Length: 184
Image 1 (cartoon, helix red, strand yellow):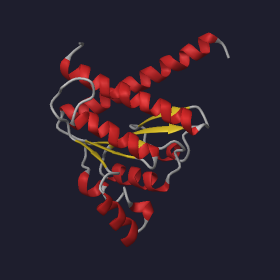
Image 2: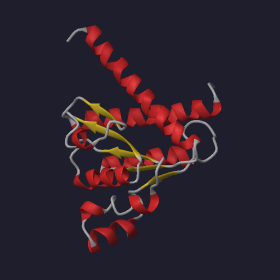
Image 3: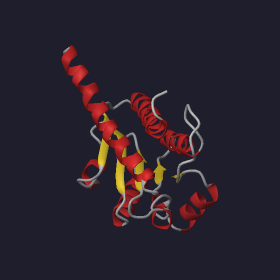
């Protein structure tokens, strides 16, 4: 692979991350919120991103509305027990999400059934979806709307995908800081 090709992939990824940042910031500036979810390590990434918005990333800023759908064990286990594990996120979206909100779906494979079900619920509520995936994007590539965004890591190695997802979350968090507070 040529150096120019590699550099172009970084430029393309940066441009897509900027588009996602504009979408996230636009929603927050209009009083909307961010709902975020994922399984396993992606759940940790979801919680990390929500904490950066509600608390802080690297600079103090006013708290911003974000909800990690992965954090309330009572809700997760009740939905999993009463309904199905596949519904642990999708049952929360209609209660917490509204038109204008953004749904951030994090999934290394792009195939997690519970995340796919939540995307469907987000679409029914006229929410924009931003998907962080890996490989070729999995089934998420097929369910995203034209207004949605998918940032996928072209790798089959879960560790590489997770590393880039965390970098993307840090870039988005830093970008929101800059949009709120200006360059430091």
